Amino acid sequence: MKITKKIRLELVRRAAAAKENAYAPYSNFRVGAALMTDDGSVFEGCNVENASYGLTICAERNAVFQAAMHGKRNIIAVAVASDDDVFITPCGACRQVLAEFTNGSAEILLTTPDGKFQSVKLSKLFPTPPALKKLAGNHNT
Ligand SMILES: [Zn+2]
Picture 1: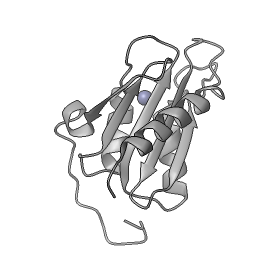
Picture 2 (picture 1 turned 180 degrees about the vertical axis):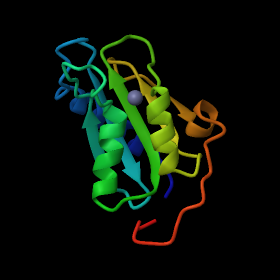
Picture 3 (picture 1 turned 60 degrees about the horizontal axis):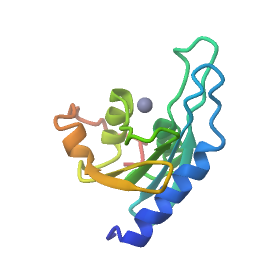
Picture 4 (picture 1 turned 180 degrees about the horizontal axis):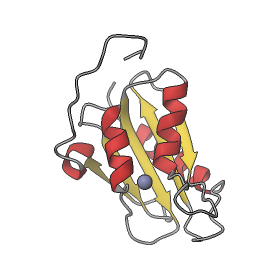
């Protein structure tokens, strides 16, 4: 599926909307993410913090897990939004989780609140993902 400018704009818009649901009372750093899978489905996520800090989940992983729960396994693009005027990038944990469900060519759309965005390939942010052999079974690859 080709990622058009219209799709990019839609993902940027939906990531910003997802950010509005962020639960970030400890950092006040709200993040939203919206991803598209190869069949055109879109899933959103926001960061959800916890008083223990370590149990906090990032917006990107929240969105990936939503997609996985719906049986989607091939992410082609992800937009990430925050309130910062600089382009924020997914953290290391999110890069690794995204790599599990992409072929590396997925576009990461980095955004700013005024709607600007830039595209970078996940393979640039996370060039050498681990490649473990998957076992046979019901993992719905
Ligand atoms: Zn993260």
